[in-house]
Amino acid sequence: MNHDSLKIPQATAKRLPLYYRFIQNLHSSGKQRVSSAELSEAVKVDSATIRRDFSYFGALGKKGYGYNVSYLLSFFRKTLDQDEVTNVALIGVGNLGTAFLNYNFMKNNNTKIQVAFDVDQEKVGTVIGDVPIYHLDDLEKILKVKDVPVAILTVPSAAAQRITDRLASCSIKGVLNFTPARLNVPTSIRVHHIDLAVELQSLVYFLKHYPEAVDEKSE
Ligand code: ATP
Image 1 (cartoon, rainbow, N blue to C red):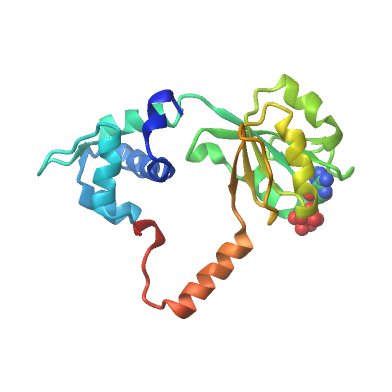
Image 2 (image 1 turned 180 degrees about the horizontal axis):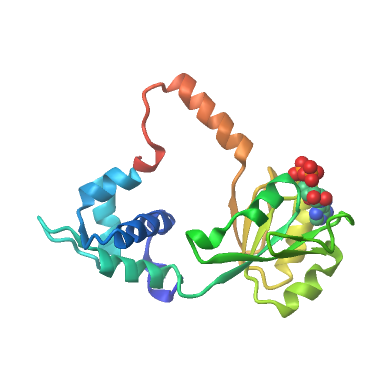
């Protein structure tokens, strides 16, 4: 993100990709303006939150007009650095890792998995979804010559911290952690944690105990 966006609250920043995806769809369908009510309905964020979020980046909708779609699109593209591809490394080419290698992240955002690492000799040296798989022993050597600021961790949780320590000594600035392990990192690194099993369990719990659906994003 560029420096202007640093003033945006983190909760707002987290919603930017969501807004961006929807605005992209609107733009490709030829729509020129959108109201906060329409946006709210589509992205399931209440319209007061949308108006507050948008006020941070100077997009002031006019009553009865809404927001200009082209303006929003160029703002989001710039803020999310969408004109530049961000390279990503994936560590752990198991079931989940393999699915990510085959998934086209470029479809919706400008991130691309460039390299993958594993310790399994059967996987090392192969290519999945155009992505070459190297041995973890070569992690530092490969990352040194590639511009890769982000890593996805899909290894067994027991291996996660040690690998993260090594990533921290490379150029990695952000880790998307799909392992259940809670990672310790220096302040120079940001970790986002996605535990699919916990998310699923939490959904099941909410279905049981809060049967009246309230979308979490609108809270
Ligand atoms: P699979 O069926 O291929 O084993 P999985 O997702 O069920 O997939 P996991 O045991 O979670 O298997 O391992 C995920 C991947 O991480 C595997 O490809 C494994 O070889 C790899 N792996 C295990 N330990 C390490 C490590 N220390 N560094 C890098 N990769 C590792």
